[in-house]
Image (tube, rainbow, N blue to C red; front, side, top):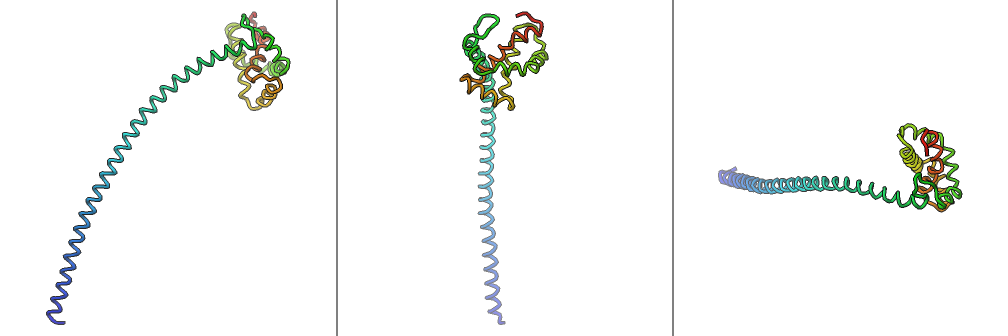
Amino acid sequence: MSTSEWITILGIAAGLFVTTIGSVWHLSNRFGALSEKVTGSLTERINRLENSVDRLGDKIEKIDESIGDIRIEIAEMQVKLDILWRRNMANSNSPIVLNESGLHALEVSKIGVFANDHYLEIISRVRSFKPANAYQAQELLISLVNRYKKIDEYRLTLQEAAFTSGYDIDSLLFVAALSIRDRVISDLNFSN
């Protein structure tokens, strides 16, 4: 190879070298700018996400406080509703007794048989709470008998009684509790 060919090759190699170095430098600057942009954008997104999570935490706290208030209001409403529907089945004198509608529900639903069949279990559960007087015994009895609606093995029987009689399950369980109330109070040695 001649000197001019070497010079040409060396010129081409130097041009390629300079072009490669320039391209690498240019690309690294572009990549750095892109990296900085992505990192900055990512940092912004993370900051926005943290702010959103903080705001969400505040909202959850407010919701939690509201739930507590709602629970109290529901409990108060439940007591009021309980008083209203009890009047449909019982006279409000003390002690409460089944009225005509309650006696009819007792007869057509045969819920009294249900209460009598479970009497030993019911009296045992009432005793376990150690009521101090006849009123406490009565309220415990009504509450405990009402829980039978949540027990799977009794659900079908109660639904059939409700369907047959045309009364709702809560009313029938209230009637069932009152049908054995005097017996419970007597067995607990309270006067009624």
